[in-house]
Length: 99
Image: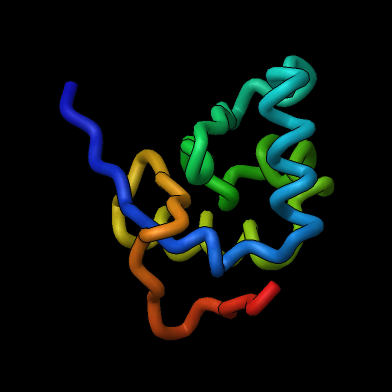
């Protein structure tokens, strides 16, 4: 199967969300298998769960609003994975943080 990914700027993530993603990647988020998070030198790879499914929503209470907005945007576009990168694209309609 071929999956699609979207290259997004890490500027769409607040500092608190980046810290959360760092922690989640380090712990492998074993308690929430609906999403995989991996970090690299310039950002993160994050799989896009279907936040419309009740069981996923029930487990996604830890998601911050900025990350949730990016995931919802990606899911609506049929994207399977996000690559948050320091040089990634900024998308109109998603919040941008200057931190």
